[in-house]
Each structure stands twice: as C-alpha cells, then as structure tokens.
Amino acid sequence: MLIDLEPVVVSALRNDPELIGLLGRDAKGNTKVYPLAAPDISLPKVTFFELTNFDNKFASDKALSSAIHFQVDVWHNSNTTKISSVVNHVMESLGFVRSGTNSLYEADTKIYHKVLRYKKTQIGS
Image 1 (cartoon, rainbow, N blue to C red):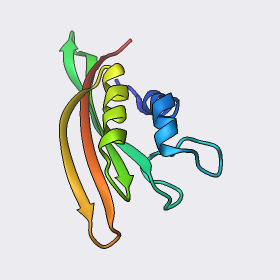
Image 2 (cartoon, rainbow, N blue to C red; image 1 turned 90 degrees about the vertical axis):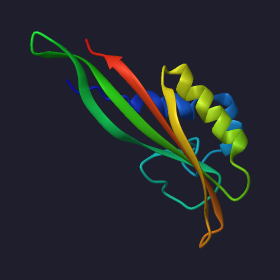
Image 3 (cartoon, one colour; image 1 turned 180 degrees about the vertical axis):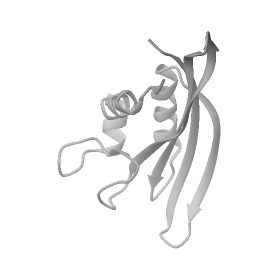
C-alpha cells in the first residue's frame, strides 16, 4: 500500500496563519512552502520532501500501515527558530513525531538552514 501524505503536509503548512505571516507569499500568491525545491531564491522559505514510505505492519500477507518519514527544511538569512517552531507545531498537529533536527549554516550563500525530520505510522484503508 502506498499512502501519499504530501498533499496533506503542503496544505497544512501553506494554510497555517502564523506561518503565512512569517514566510509571506510568492509571486503566485502561495505561502512560501514548496515540495522538493523552491522556484525562486527569496527568503525565508520552507521546502520539504518525503524521505521514506514503506509498509510496516502486516496481517494475512497484506500491509496494514505504512511508516512515512518527511524532511522539512527552513531557509532564512537570519535566525530560523520561530519558523521552525511553527513548522514543528503544524507537523505534530498532523500526527508526526519529530525524529531529529540539525542546524546548518551555508557559508557560500550565507543562509541559515534548519533541518527537521519527522516520522508517522499511517494506517491504510
């Protein structure tokens, strides 16, 4: 069974009022939250992607649930703490559990980059 949670994640992140206020909107009017890659270089922004998605519980040779892992990246030219906190709240509201974080500084572009990883077991229908 393949469960696609990308539409749920993008909708929740793009429609969160606090995140809209922190990120702003792009030229198309979307909150600056993008699957995989952002269409422009303006900051701040959030990108995300599915890391893994695999069946993890079985009965009678059929998958009952999937383990799904996402990575969410916060990009800013200053501190990422506030945006990261709101992203964390949104992901937890969707039932994800944070499995790790990493704070990075991209020296060549002078961009602060916060990596947030999440996991969730989703029961199939």
